[in-house]
Length: 323
Image 1: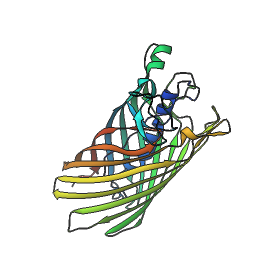
Image 2: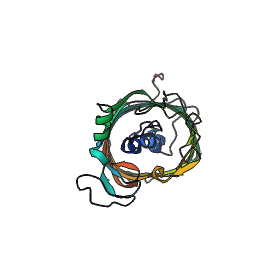
Image 3: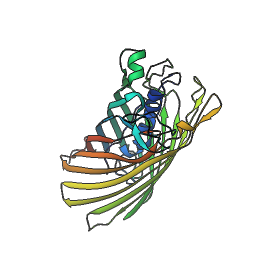
Image 4: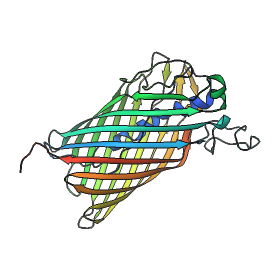
């Protein structure tokens, strides 16, 4: 219940252009906040022997961010002074765009245990006046990013269900620390710990789900950078007006700690964001659901601002079972 969420990798720390670094160093966080949502049905687990697979496409294009460090010098009026957390244009007329595809596969080992894997592929681009002067062209990256794996354990059953989800991100994507380069991987491990609680109000066609998670982010020793741990959350309320239609509204976000680079904590790397996401799902048609969502940022810090389009197709069932 809930369409897939976004993600992209971090920028090499050696980049001198702050506008570029402040945008692309957080793209892994866009990915990381919501990847736990790509698993099926919130707190609900799959029946034994059933699969849940999903392909999700995400698109973001923006020229605005939530300011990391206050100050002036931004278009269209460089005299305006912004505070941390204000929404403003990128410096040097910067703009960022990203397209991503996520493939998720989950399997019900038992009625209470799911195992899953996620493989992301993306293309992203950032440009501003300083980059075009220094490099002559925008910075782009295309490729497979870091793989994630999950285990969900169902603890409560009935109208109210509860689960614990554990996950990790392995540094499988290419990470190159070169000036002006956008790596497709982060070069470090993450470990997720997520508590999930859901409630069905049947016979009323309404459900609710709440997730609260903590992400332990390990140090990237190649560049002596600790990206800072994160808390993330999601609250979702859904209603089905008919058998083949589901509408939902989600509120989701992350609260990150400051990153530490070369032993120094950097205030511009305190990352926070909150989204609302109206979602529409139709199906199932032969066990296939089609979904669309618009994720709208409402506040943040050191994070892109704007709207993200998300569309996906998912399958749930046992393709090897002949009724």
